[in-house]
Length: 228
Length: 228
Image (cartoon, rainbow over all chains, first blue to last red; front, side, top):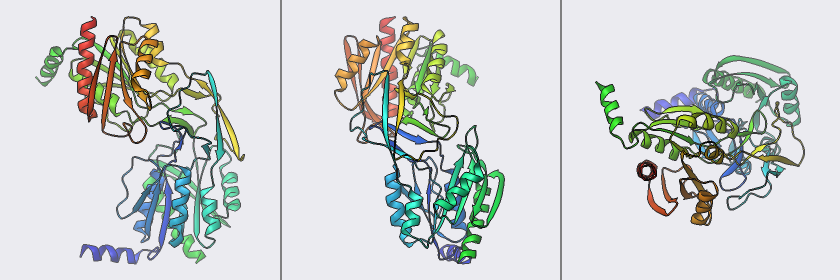
């Protein structure tokens, strides 16, 4: 009976019958077995959005970098570490998805030659050679031209300009941008978003990440419906 | 009455009347406002050892890098982020301590010129210039020659040789060494330690970090007593 009630609730959501794949959290790029390069993403926004899309009736798969968050109820979760892992799982899982949301803070660069043993370093200075990581969301868009693809942008300056540039350059269907740095957004439980799409935008003012995720989920459902 | 019982218990411990300062967890060295270099330390060993020393009667101050661990009951905690922060607080707090334990996985290098704004990078390759961080435990030892100083060593090869070298070079009173890499120690709840001091050593075989921390705390109390 509970199972039927849950199934019924799903059947009633605006995203019923759809599969949404989200990426969330940071990635880690190894320097050696103990050291890595990463970033301040807590994963909270992506996890909250996964729960929101699930509540709207979608089947949701979350591809997550290292976080300390519980998996939202009813959401399938795949754990990854590097940008390369995240790309591989994104391309696989997006094959039967209708909506793809790149909320992970993917490392832009990886270390050229991670060491197998812990590096013993005694020099006063050193230099770490890095190579550009693949752009996950651009790769997913290229492979799946009909997918509804939503990106995120974390900016410290010129938010609208940078976000609109990314929307057009990567051929995204929607982009959600927020300010970062100076204590904003990262590791906090509230957030504000400016959401842009071709010919439109909406401000989601400062609120809890759960509330913002509900509004953003509803907006994704609305724009997905408008496109279909 | 509870307060008195607690005070009585403290008064009975072998470390009664002593102040122990511990460092624990990773440090983070900023690349820009969102990116950083860090390492896989969970902080579990240092936190468990703080609880162990507190149970042995010491007043304990924990200087902690970013972790997701609760502060052990009765322990004072100071949060830090970079190696430079950790050094500053260590030198301050060690001034009235008798025991100093460096369990933090301090970053060996920091980024030369962290950016104030998020770096926009479009190059296929880049290079990150790094400078050697101060050696916290060596600086503490130099400033406070009478302090009982305990170091940790995480090794992927030649454990005893590397650990003994560090013990002598840094003039430590004791060093606790463990194997890392290939799934060992980091982010796990059990651990094994090889402990070395001038003229002695002891193996603490694989056990929960709480059990290992109790044994190591007792060994620190024993060696501190032998020296005093």
